[in-house]
Amino acid sequence: MASSAAFSPAAASFAAVKKEFGLSRSVASRPFPSAGKSRKPASKRIVSVMAPQQTERKPAATGSVKNAMTMTEKILARASEKPELSPGENVWVDVDVLMTHDVCGPGSFGIFKKEFGENAKVWDREKIVIIPDHYIFTTDERANRNVDILRDFCKEQNIKYFYDIKDLSDFKVNPDYKGVCHVALAQEGHCRPGEVLLGTDSHTCTAGAFGQFATGIGNTDAGFVLGAGKILLKVPPTLRFVMDGEMPEYLLAKDLILQIIGEISVSGATYKSMEFVGSTVESLNMEERMTLCNMVVEAGGKNGVVPADSTTFEYLKDKTSKPYEPVYSDEKARFLSEYRFDVSKLEPMVAKPHSPDNRALARECKDVKIDRVYIGSCTGGKTEDFLAAAKVFLASGKKVKVPTFLVPATQKVWMDIYALPVPGSGGKTCSQIFEEAGCDTPTSPSCGACLGGPRDTYARLNEPQVCVSTTNRNFPGRMGHKEGQIYLASPFTAAASALTGYVTDPRDFLQ
Image 1 (cartoon, rainbow, N blue to C red):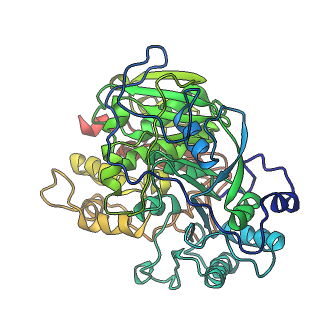
Image 2 (cartoon, one colour; image 1 turned 180 degrees about the vertical axis):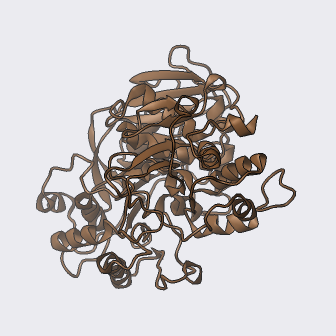
């Protein structure tokens, strides 16, 4: 979701800060310290706060470390050139990547120009990523104008990574257009372990799946980062979530994060880091880890983070050539709290209206009649999400009983839907299975319906309907109509519900 409020404690005036750092209309960036690309996999042993175990991991190169630190503390210490940090400290942090999109980009650019000058140059044109993705496929003139503003700014500043879209009639003829920013950032190689990634969108925390510090910021902070390449951050304390046990075939990462949010509430991690470890987390692929980190902000979290391992490094092999250095929490790092879960005993979850922490078992909601199903967004619109939904449709062999909307997160996901064979299908692709099940044709990648974009947005809730959705928020009006009711669920549960017309436990079809 687009962010409009500042997330950091940057209270100092622009004038005072610019004077302190000697900032002019063109600000040079500091080099990011790195020891080269690492290919060292993370340990398979779970680090326990109560009973630390031995590990071969070495502390990050942050100088003489006196106190043990968490991953988040280490990343911020490196980025602020401090030997160590503790929760509550305020530090100036060098930014590695700043992302903005069509909703918040124009406002951020306006603040940048106001404070640094109309002719000012950004601090580093290669560290800024601009992705139109929210209000794209619409006839709304103001929404279209926002993309024009992005284009003009990128041309003026010679921004290297601008994923433009010009022809709205057919997204496929726009080779530069990617789709939903949080998934595109990963697919285009902008997410790297040990780095600091900021974005003018609260779900920027998705990138924490790569072992980096990633969080959403407001337009004012983004305007400053555009000119200075720095941000003032308060170091958050860390909550650790240890998840062990074999993942049942009917569960997905969406079930895990709904379980956690229901456990701690939507304010349980306010301005805290959420670190995910354990054998279950290690077994998850990168897209599932992204789902886990994506929704930490629904618990109030500042950031979510998963230790980088061989799965991370393998994913990044063909996506980035830039060196990076992963960090890991020290054995004796201090965690505010630790939560442990035996994942093998969990069941499919949903979040009932109108809050992500209104947790319930999917089977307990079997009498809830629904009007539609939505599969998409940065949370549930990745390739793995569509493969999961296709698996349910394939297992049932039935037709959907309610309209089922499919919105891939990016162009690459859209292509995967039409190209990748679904395991056990005899070579059928997701698109073939979706067509046989009677779903709507997969449409243009965007996140407009997830947050209730312009009224002509595809799959927007324009009536007070009940919807099972793989998105991340179910507040009143979130997908459009203020009286709409949204049940957040995994792609498994969403697909099963589409087949029955009621909120349905996917075990009805997967066992």
